[in-house]
Length: 133
Image (cartoon, rainbow, N blue to C red):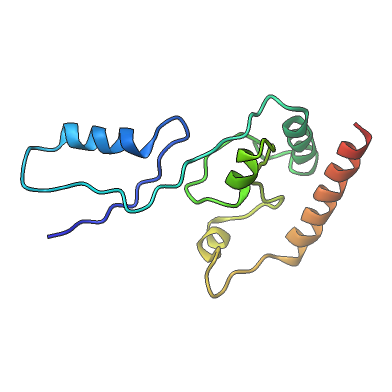
């Protein structure tokens, strides 16, 4: 028998640490553990002027929403830029609901026109604020 696990490792852990923890918690037996692929998680600091600009702009356009840092289980090219010392944040400047989330990367992926227009306005304001700071 074979089991393939897709484990998303938190930024403060390594794949080796996770494998070690799994080994410690499994009963002994005739099995082996192998890491097929490992992509190191990455984070950008939130104590930056850039993050503060995103937060303030989001609060202006979406006053009913909480703007909080989070961890996304997928990954983007941001990890490559972070390795080069760049600060990167993944954020969709729109109010999406559970139906929208279910369509992400699907055959019916789309965004409402109103969200597109709002997103453009939000990003334009961020660009203007960062340009003058």
